[in-house]
Length: 469
Image 1 (tube, rainbow, N blue to C red):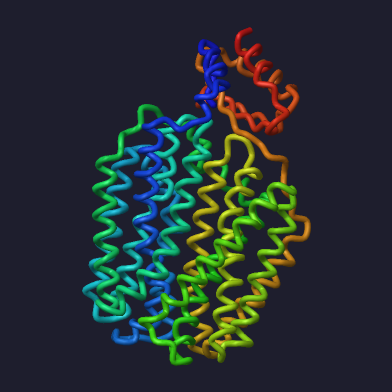
Image 2: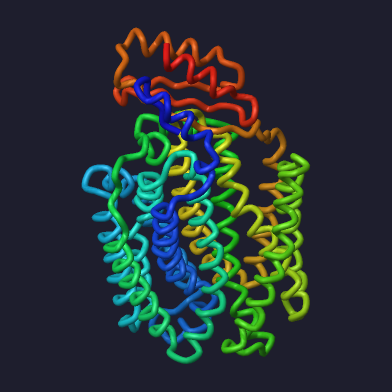
């Protein structure tokens, strides 16, 4: 919601029924960006269920290099996620997206042609260098009205979950027919398809408020020291650590039980479907009953139970299947709820920075999971990877002591370009005193004020009166 003193009718427009619907242009933008994002994530995820099996034919293969190759993309993603977002602000969203997808395609080709695990790892590093998440989300914000952005971001978020489910099925199917190189050729084709979609995606007609979409360098240190945000960043890092470590050990464990690699998708597909069926009621009930923390801990208990069952029941296929169902139920719930919690915790005008740190922590977790999982598997065997995961979930559960969930809030940005510095400061004091205002941040260099207001208790008519005065 963007307001200016000369455009008081903006508030009236936002309060009309039509404002609650995505326009045709917004729907097209959401669909295109979701496809771009998910096609790239599909390529990253597809390696998880197959590399530990089909990578054995590569020179230099070892459990450690399995982990490095699987997690390598996370390292460059973590390093470049925020800088690539900043670059998109300088040279344009489309240019950065095309650059990133080009690097991803190049990395896929390098990995497809590789005959050693070292070159595959290098290809994965190149894939990760195509860190376009910040640019995609910033373009989504640029192409949509502020009151509709949560819907568009949710569409993009759901596409990631669907791409993961598709990757768990497509990866084993393609690898069984075309080998590991076939998987990488497929990911290269997906990157080229995504580049075509970028070229067809409209350019932004305006630029969304930067602090709500991209990271601000000066704020990084402050947010890193926030206890509540630190819990969430460590949480997403651990979640992707567990995911990557799991797929270093699980595919090989299934082979040890004479469960053929070409049939692994027969296990993954029903398990993922079942996990979504179980996860959706958890989300609905937690929101409706306002018990987010309780269900957050329940999801962690599911992860703990799953990793413990992986460790204790590694020699029995039914127990592995049950553990996988528990794991993905907890994983999917946390993957969906962590960004929502982060958005509510982030201070006014600092959501972009908070999300940038969150994304970097997410990918760094994937790298650490690959590295640590490979090391542990090489030194102590596959069951030790499951034991390590169990111990980490216990620590994560303990860290939720003192965790809090703030009231549901909406974010508003107010254009102050028509006001003097003194008028802007006076308006800030008035806004801070309005009922329902949780935070107000004045950013003079942007000539903008950011508000965080409590949903349902903020009076937009009062804001309209202040703007008109």
